[in-house]
Image (cartoon, rainbow, N blue to C red; front, side, top):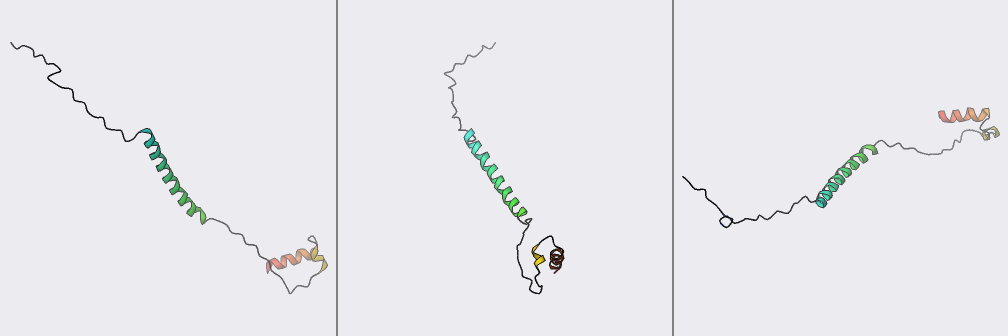
Length: 93
C-alpha cells in the first residue's frame, strides 16, 4: 500500500503578508464624524435662518402734529372727559 508522506516546514516556507494600515482609525473616524455633523448643522442653520427670517414682526414709532384742534387745559389730564374724547377722535383720524 501507500506510505504516508511526511512534509516538513522546509518544503513549505512561511509567507508573511504585510498588514495594510487601517484607514478608519479612531482619530480619523472621530474627525470624519465631526465634519459630517458640522456640515449638517450648518445646512440646518442656513435653512432655518431663511425660513424664520420672513416671520419677523416690525414695529414703527412715529409722531405727528394735529394743527386744527384748539388746545384746552383739560387735555393735559389723561383722566378728563375732554382728553378721552379728543384722543378717540385723533385715533380715528
